[in-house]
Length: 81
Image (tube, rainbow, N blue to C red; front, side, top):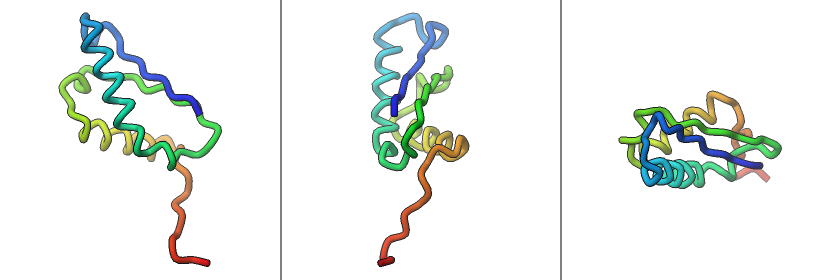
């Protein structure tokens, strides 16, 4: 699996802002990586509102996007065996 992050200069002219947003997006998706089905290559494109978002908000938004795109593996039921 490969994941790419795109932050256009329309979001911010400053490279430091664009790179910070890419790092935040990477941290936000890191917790969901084990749940993503194998074989997917993902590209996440930031919107203007993401520049003001915190990590928690990005985590929630990315989780919703992954569910909507149906790239998450089916839930594992614990206690069966």
